[in-house]
Image 1 (cartoon, helix red, strand yellow):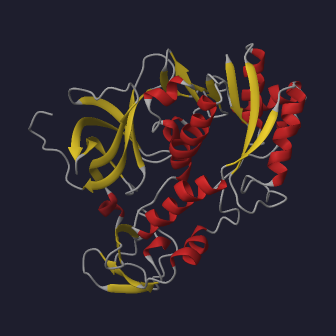
Image 2: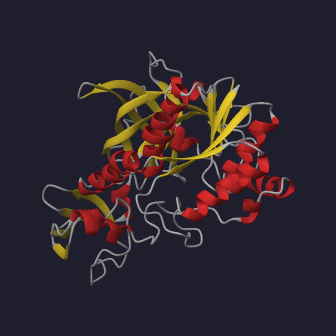
Length: 373
């Protein structure tokens, strides 16, 4: 099988490529240049797509004895990931750019080019597993990336390989060292790859500009502070609210709602954050088939944590396939723009991904106690 291995310059993708070679595939390595002005060096564990990363990927390919190329996807990345990220924050949402990158760049633009060049599969260093064609969580719970892969369609999964999803991260590093890969101890990338400074608010502010508004109390409506734009806030945020005085009861305040039209950021108590229902749009069903009835599942609403048992119902919302999710336990910190990923718990190791949708609205009311589900 001809396999295109996406090599970021990190240890995970290097070992993924090595395993593809070891499996007997004809492997070609490719590094995606995603920045229009890549820096020479990374800043520790921050950032990616530097010239250092491209060089690390090339050295790994040399050790593996495979052809290696650098492909320029900077314009596509800017249009589909960075611009959407900025627009989403301006709309009062909290997007996940890694999910968008998988959806529109790695497993769309890159995969399409791979198909055009007659590759059979795309291998990446994501921590997830494909078992009999089904997407499941990785063995390493701490590194699992099935959440950001749940947006992939059946056709995209059919051409995907995740060679390292069955192995814990420490073993991946040890394997890289045994194979003579210089990236064995390279730090993992953290935060948002295209914001190497880590200052998301400053990055957004430079692109959105000043859009003043008010921070108000959820219960009294009192104006507590002014702000420069809703892009500086996310649901569940506690710090950096600009409020001088504590709440009357002395308890912390959290962002509970964001209205981009009026510029109003509402803050309240921890209890005000509880969500019992979610309506999601842009539904993707991993099997390629929309379920024909409601079903019980576990929903995850952010990349790390935010899990609860739920009952999911396929719906149509604004003419698009969507999902109504009724939680049986409340969640907090559920932000519009994030993904709601549905899993079926499995008696065997690893939960099965059923599908996902983009969180559009939430409900605070708990389900009726007496009615049937």
